[in-house]
Length: 542
Image 1: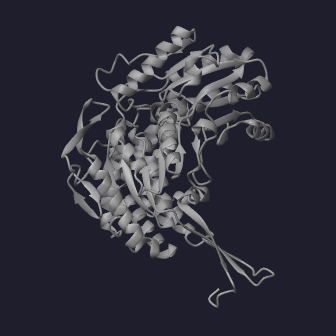
Image 2: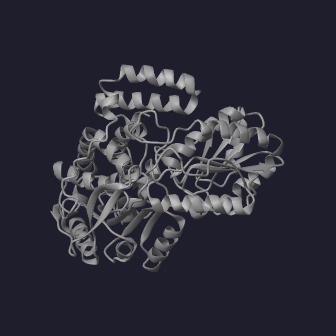
């Protein structure tokens, strides 16, 4: 989409080449896929293939935090290790925040908001900084993509395709400086009063970021917050802190005023101090529903604003008119993206009972073609899970599915040909009842459940029978029926014939999948407070 266009034309071309290779993986049969990949690789061997390399990102100060415009040591000099999930070897060691570090970061953000120039600039002036951040991020897109692979295990061809687009998030919000209604004038009433509705920055923001797609999550939180005039404390995860550090380096390079962006990494207990801190006006969080409930309750205690982007158990309804092999190929994309570690992944697959077995066969064929292995290998379809703990979690759910009577028809084990790394085979369960644990709880891995239903009404009932409501999809050749079904589904996003999300519109969930929205103009509103000003008469400058 045009709003994600990179300012760097070379990066745009390379990301497009990566995307075509990725689409070849998703949509084509193995023989055709290899031919297309071979041709594209030959075309881009002096560009694209040079990008698929495990070179180390240049993070200058992993042993420090970025607070108040400076790189500072942690109060306790504690650290934590980030493990490469493909090799199980140490990738990098980062500084670990203590309670006093949180106080310092919040204090710097508070001072920058209360007394610094940032919230007093015009939106256009702040937009110039956002564009500068985008430009620097584009220059480091290859490095950031490699970082994503090294920290989390996402296949590098996917990382290289997506990362240049993330820089465009800052451009998108910069452009809103000229189009968003930050002030509305209301005509004088009968009594001669003149009204203004103004939207002002909410204040200090605590941005708590999940590990699966840290750079994108940071962008969708930080870019609108900065445009609004807020100052931010970014709390990264232990699994993938690096993109927060690189953003801090970029903020330093573009001359962002001190205290506007502050970056720390902390465990759950210390992170809670950020949520509780009286000088933090708003929390924006991405993570599990259980953690979100905890954060929401703390924010409620002190009536702090919060946006919560939480978990999902997203349904896909395959109607009787749709080709099952096409549906299976599309769903296999959702399952292998980030090794299924995506909150909006389509994991509950709802199909007519009389087509169940045929659909299971199609899924087994599609999932069986997924190549699991080294994420820096351009022919790999799916890399490892992010951590050993995450793999253990996925395996425990697979065992629960078997124990409950679901039929394991594909995968479910570790690849025998890989002797290290947190790998697992993409997994398909058939004959699943919607009351089974594997159909009720978020697994966060490449595991899907096929649920047979008797008719379309039953399909809608099953799709909505969940505590979640983040994403869904309707597979049908009838666009009118797709729209009709979409309106009946209790989900923040509903796609048509594939796994769909669009942050340029809005993203967020119903029910326990979250509160509020990110992306688009909807994603700017949570960082603004609305104020009504009523004057005796219209000012001359209005």
